[in-house]
Length: 172
Image (cartoon, rainbow, N blue to C red; front, side):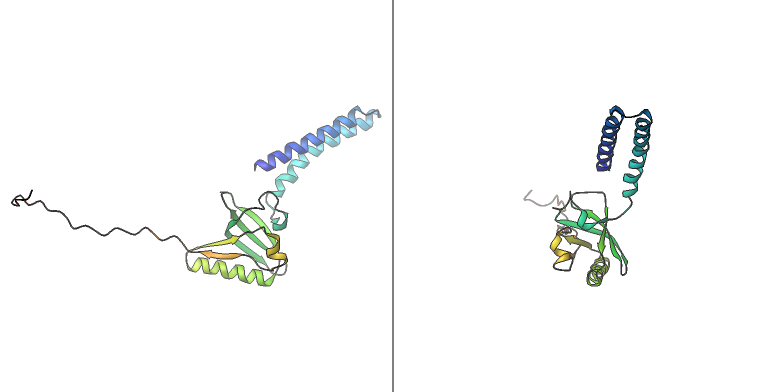
């Protein structure tokens, strides 16, 4: 969400700079007024466009800032057969899930479906290793998806026999 705020601040700054140039240019007052009006309409429109992008899935190839992530937990997947594969991923060291879109490949969709089914059956976690590695989809044609089994619960130590105090014993 912080990225959206920064993008909006940059958008406002650029619009204000362009409006300042347009207003102070030696033009007719009508032209300057139109430039000012266009700027005031551009700012809310820019905000609406940036906020609208939050609900859309991002193509995995467009990920720039988190490209070096090594592990992503698969929270959910949806297949739009013949069009796209949609993924909800929780990236390593982050709480917020992200919404991504993959181009449709039948083999990838089948493997992803199998991994998620195995994870559900074993009560485990489905994981993508190097999710944004370009060669994984384009050249290899496959995802690095696998299942991480749940951690084993800690084992109990063996019970010690209860110690009973015997007042008649001499070695006390």
